[in-house]
Image (tube, rainbow, N blue to C red; front, side, top):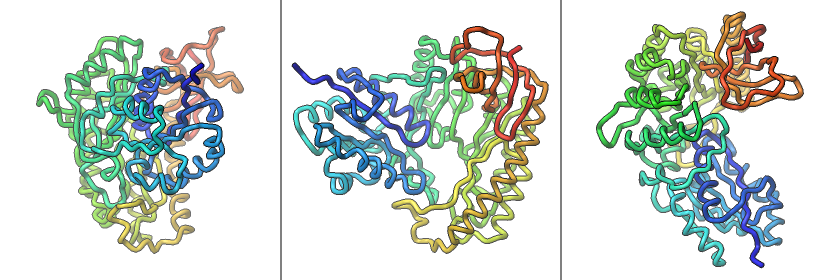
Length: 439
């Protein structure tokens, strides 16, 4: 009797990785594999990896080491994604029990690689082409998120920020045709999804290969697909953030009133060293467009502290920008050197303790800003899309159009399903969430 083909897949990193995993899962299921919830129950163990953050590679190798004993039971291992593309065949040297190494651009070749694996090959690589646009057209996608459908509209990055590894793992920017994007949006709507999130390393760098639609026009077109109630997009780059994006959000209520616009630093000198290709003034001009919108558009950002050469004055300039913009959410990080990046040659002389101190100062100040921002919603009625239930607190969890978490109670005996929309009156606020009751 043939052994059942089962797989375990763990995803590290961003929403693009999560969507890549949906493509991998769909392909494996089409090839006769069944997904299981534990490594011990799988014949094939896969880790879809991210190399953006500090010690990303080490986390993967630690996880591989934790479960290498399963190799003796006949399990096979595969490393996918950015660490696979970055480390390549060196993974086989560090973890000889790994049989498959594949970057995201090669997922369309997974059926062939799986056949070779099943035939007994022990070292299979899919690292051949980071420039292909075929990465968009994976034939089988198993959507795992119960309430949000993801669509990758642009892959790769041409910016080469001095700290960032993405251009070396995802390749150059290549956009998907607007016809293809809209076709998938309609298929997602037909599946019952009402929220779509458009994805890209630099999502607003989108250039339609068909020459039909700008990024703002594509947003508007997706927002007009029948059945779609919310459209989100991430991540935007300030260099390509144009006024017509704000105009589209104003014009189409289905476009969520939230923009994630990473600034990274408030110092012009540090931004130049980061090769970000804009100044704080350029960035703040775009913030001005957003704040002048007829809708209240929520703002979030990414900030790196402790970049090589960052002085106390540079950090103060970042804190000044933080106070001026008054973000609703900040993802703050300590600088860490990434493989292959230009910043590797810079002297990273700022002690880890000082980096940690600056990060804590930034996060403490941001918490106070959010406390004030979130308090403005008290007694408002917001439309909330249900994402789940917290039985311990007897609350339903969801998110507003502004991407703010809302925890609320409802008189419904049966908890509303994920993807349901409810009107919620806000009765209490916290720096990171809102509390309310369904109206």
